[in-house]
Image (cartoon, rainbow, N blue to C red):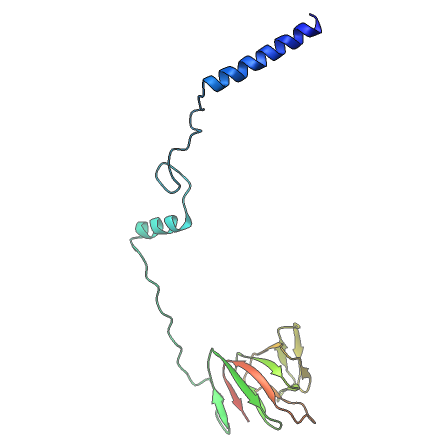
Length: 178
């Protein structure tokens, strides 16, 4: 076969295929869109639909959100010769003057926002600096904006010796000022 004949035959076959394909517009079975998402015809569903069906299957029906309860003070604060004392899961802003000690209850967290603070501890154990991931012992400086965790009561912070300005500390949990 000559090349001109091959080219003519190829053009004719392709042209006939395009013409027949546009005349007989038949879609493949199952390729058409028959419903909306989330209906029985469409297997794709949303998370909320699945959650509703699980609640119905468990017999719970619909759920209503509950309001959280406020914990009561169960005596975890230090008692004794405290000038001021508090216990809460809310953040409290506390000002510590030179010569005062901010003593934490067990599990309290402090963030020194302003001033020069050092750790106070009656024993050799220190306080966890969660920002740096290290243990800060008695007398060592506390960096501003560092989250300090107090695992046991009786440890705290105070103004660094020689500094005349006070500390501004964010406190979560129980504390006392001595």
